[in-house]
Image 1 (tube, helix red, strand yellow):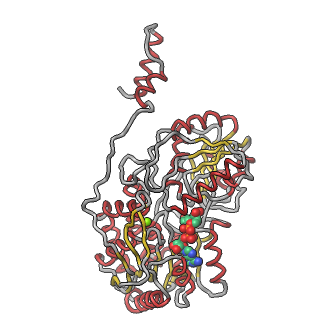
Image 2 (image 1 turned 60 degrees about the vertical axis):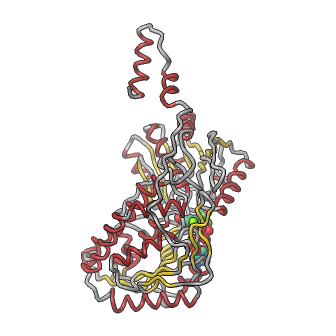
Image 3 (image 1 turned 180 degrees about the vertical axis):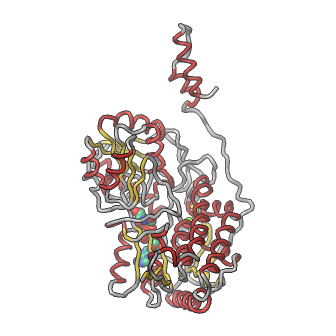
Length: 508
Ligand code: NAI
Ligand code: MG
């Protein structure tokens, strides 16, 4: 018997005067707190990787020096060691990208370039399982997400931009378009493969070549992507990957022979890059932090909204720039929403990222865990009320239980600063005008969500929000055809869709 029928039968039995269990006791019986899941670990037996990596330059894996370790945040074990690119290595990579741009990539027709992108997308699909496992090991995200969200979107991005490669002349009617040259791209650790795809696919489709620097705490899958480029027969030098930390990133973006810089990461580093590039004539796009408002009106489908609130903040442990980290609930329904939300959060399973039942995996690093703990403590100190389900966290690795704060004031740090973890701050509002004012009361401007039964209201509010992406009755939905990016301290420029080609083209 399905749960609903069981509960209804219980009520019908009661109406007949028979002694039947209450709806609540049936719910307890069916979903009760004691529902334990047996471990369901994804097998990693068939996945191999090296213990040491250098860089990928001019179509070859090259050795490097000054290796650092990337760890598995769920076990704190070393996954592999990666070299640090110094100025000489960065120079080599940029020179390779320049040669490839002039001699190999630029001379091809758009259709020919598209063929490589299609091939890359297909190989990613074929090797999806291996990529998902490696991503979860090096990053800590649940396999359910790397398998069902990250990797399929990575393939979709290459396939989507493959389609534009031979249609650039029709993309911007009446204008002539030209590629820019060499793109220097720096990406973060929260979606290692997906951010690589967001950067590389449009750059190549538009006819540019690339030097990419992955984040130093999650470089493993970029090296696997390099193997895939090789397997796809991508001409040498079209994509080069250099490993290293912030210093390497800074050398890459400031390199005099880089024509276009694309960066995703912290607002602080984004600002420093913008300062460094000022007056250089280089093209720049920045995709930075956020403090997204998820707004729930009293006419919203509440159960659906609760699911959206949960995926909005607990997806990828909340390591999401567009996370719905500020929940704005209309005052008349706040008690119901909070009750349902806390009920729902109690069912989230936190733990081994490689377990197929896991909802919330490992916090990506010790540094990030410290930052989350510090901000959560500030919430407690400033007088917000903390709610957290009883949940057992693994003994090893970096984990943090899903946390909700109520009684949050707009001035609290947890309402203002990006926590980048599984922590939700709940505020209330009375009127649509107040919702808009509170949602926009942030230095950021990346994302927002609106939950309402009324389409006209939804569109009106969406137009008043200062956010690059606004979801209606859903949250954290991504599609390669849909542009993504922010305003204000969330950065500028768009990735995805037709808009995502613009930063990589000169349109005249
Ligand atoms: P970060 O901005 O330092 O790192 C992102 C990337 O930039 C990495 O590849 C890093 O090596 C590189 N980098 C660092 N300094 C650089 C420089 N001066 N020039 C060029 N590249 C440089 O971010 P971090 O320290 O990993 O995270 C700090 C906070 O930033 C997080 O707690 C979160 O709030 C936010 N963040 C936002 C992201 C987003 O998707 N918008 C992604 C990652 C972090
Ligand atoms: Mg790692």
